[in-house]
Image 1 (spheres, rainbow, N blue to C red):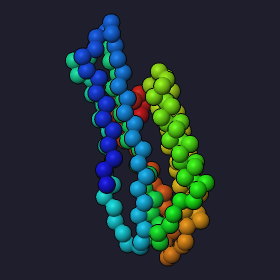
Image 2: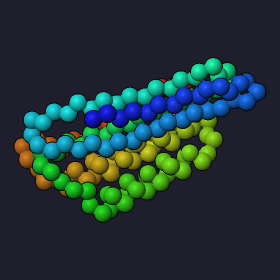
Image 3: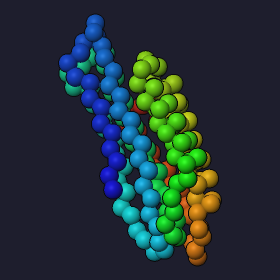
Image 4: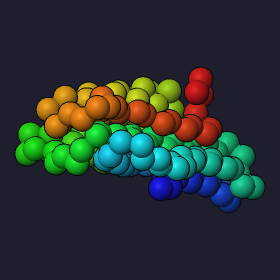
Length: 143
């Protein structure tokens, strides 16, 4: 499983600066005891021949591990759809990078909460369900 966010700012100048932002959220589920997942989570932000530019990339991967398969109920799916809409809405604003990072981290926290609630109602086996967030940021201030 691979989750990746790439942002490149190129060809702008100090008089005509630009910003490139890439954010990726991915939810991966695995079921069964003794299963193993190689979850790759990467982000890369680059400024190419671009003075005064900013490139920001963030990859957020949520790994849900349960002893037996389960399905997200309509409530959880609705909550995730709402978070997705709010994440998409961030593309319409020119927030400072630190504020944007804070907003995206807040949405990631909400996703984690929805998934924790969902696995709390999943059938149990010998192992406890788990939700793990893998976050990789590049170009963000105060990562």
